[in-house]
Each structure stands twice: as C-alpha cells, then as structure tokens.
Length: 252
Image (cartoon, rainbow, N blue to C red):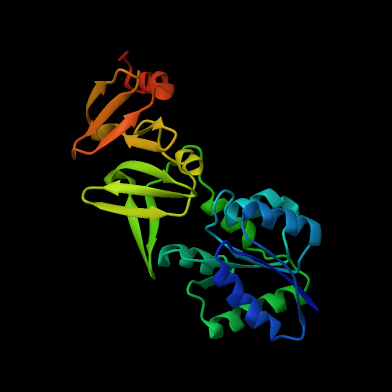
C-alpha cells in the first residue's frame, strides 16, 4: 500500500489529486495539508511514502518544507508547481518529478507510476538534495527575477523593473511602470531575498526600490510621504525611519 500525503493551499488542486488517488486501490491517503507548516507537521507525524507538494504556498513554501525535514524526507516527492519552463528544466535535470498546474490526469498517472517505482526500490531520490541546494537562495545571491502568475501564464519580472512591493495578506503586489503583478509569497520571505543595497522596507506593508525615490515629504504625524519617479506615493512609517536613514546614509 502506497501511503500518500497531499500538500497544497488550493482546495481545487487538493480535490483533483484526491479524486484521482481514490481510484487507486493500492493507495492510502493519510492526510491533506493546506499550507507549509501543516505539511511539515503531518509529514513528521505520519511518514508518508509519497508527498505531493505544492512549491508555492504561503508562509513556509514547498522547498522550505523539505529543508526543514532534513534527513526525514519521504522516499518520493512529486512537486505541484506553476513555475516557468526554466524551473521545470531544473526539476527534469535532477530527476525529481513534477506536475504543472493546471494538472493533467495523464501526466499525473505518469508521475504516480514513477513515484511508486521509487518507493518500491526503497531508495531515496538521489536528485532531491541537489535540487534543494540549487534552488535555495544564497546569502550573497540576491533575487533577480520573480515568477508572477496570471491565469495559466507565468511572467518573469525583473526586480530591476519593480518600483515597490505591497503586502496583501499572504500575497505581494509588484508595482512596475504602469503594471501590477501578484505573487504568492509573504513580505517577510520576499524581503529576505532582496538586495538590501537596492531595496528598503519603509512600512510593514511596503518595500521600495531606493533608485526609484524622487522625494520625501515630512508629515505632522512623524511619518513621511515618499514620491517615486512614476509619481506613485508610498508611506514611510516612523517605525522604519531609522533603518531608512541608515540605508541612505543621512538623517532626514
């Protein structure tokens, strides 16, 4: 019996995988996780043979789950992803299987067969560790492109085009010249991957590109109004003024 855990924050995605798996008499679904933290806890508690794992989840993402698991990785992991073709080639190169959203049933059957064989031979996936090392952000390699999904399309947005980032619950809006993109990531996680020489946090819900700032205006409240080169305005909260001053090298 193949013991399977599904981890995806989208109910429709979980329902689709569950429906296909229920039709297999040799599969036991041991649980469904709605986010990364839940996936981590359920994997540690139930030790599934196979983990269907969404790459992009709010808070702790799929790669973060695997990093936290350390030596307790399942024998087989099938990524569920909306990544662009470059990332998919990385999965191919390391022989880690994936399902591209929206998931196709025929492709699902292929992935399940591969995973079943991996579990049957009782050998951990040899490419999984290498993939984690390749995709894990390095402390000196800052984010340069951000995959933003719109419907079935994924746009790679250069961080050099971004004027400012705006938090929206577990999502972030990327504001570029005349356009907005939405990515499924928390502001805290995104901030840790941005070059601090180019971006600065100015509010709990805003990060701006230093090179896009045109002027600042002091407000009676102690806050500041930042005007960007595009004419857009963003609040600089007094909570972040000291950090901002350190970044620009002068007192306001």
